[in-house]
Structures are given as structure tokens and as C-alpha cells.
Figure 1 (cartoon, rainbow, N blue to C red):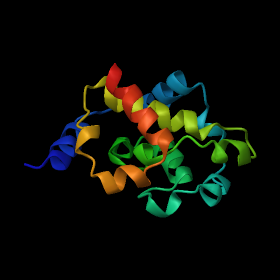
Figure 2 (spheres, rainbow, N blue to C red):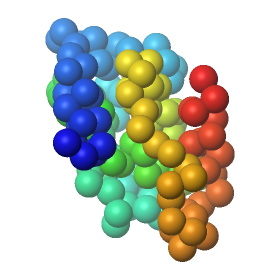
Figure 3 (tube, one colour):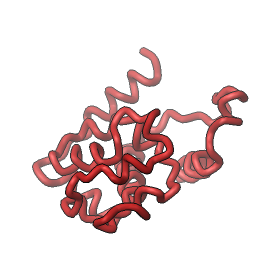
Length: 141
């Protein structure tokens, strides 16, 4: 079984009772996802939205709807923490903190198969530095 499938299978085992996902995200991020009225401004300003499988506003919607498959989304790992979404949000929701909270939920279940040294050199030159900082930070713990 390849690593991606194994990780997806492990993540799919993470379950929450009704309202627990949103509660845990709020506890970790300090942000109330229920304040989002789905205007899409966060997604419109995101420089990486084209590469995401879920737009930032969809991520929030998944959390509100208790859809834990959001943890399998590559979007939470592609977020570069540039804060464009947070700066533009008319409800002052810091979506960057929400993305970090979702990554922390996955990592707290000890699911991490990233190996920085296995990233091809060509890709390493294309990946934003903030992504590497986040990668190394999460691999320290």
C-alpha cells in the first residue's frame, strides 16, 4: 500500500461526535467557524487556491457540517500561512489559524509521513519557504 493511501486510511479513522470537530478547531485556533457566512473572499484572494482540492471557504463549511474528511484534504497542507485570507475576511476570521488547527488535529493522532529529504530538488525550489518552515516545525514535535 503506498504511503498516501495508508495516510488517508489512518486519517479516515479520526472521528468526531456532532459538533466536536468545530469545537476542537475553535479550541486550537481561537476562531469561531460559525461566524463565516461563506462569502468566498478568502478563496478569491488565496494565491494557492488553484492547487487546492477544497477552497478555504469550503474547508470552513466542512468543519461546520462535521465532515471530518476535511482532514484528508490537501488544502490544509498547501496553506502557506500568507494571511491574505485573514486580512480580507469581512468577519475577521483568521483562516490561517484554522488551517493550522486542522494540521494539528492530524498530527496529534501521530499521522505524519512527510520526509523533507525525499522532496525532489526541482520541487524544493518551487515550494514557498514558509511551507518548509511549517514542515520542519511540525516534524520537531
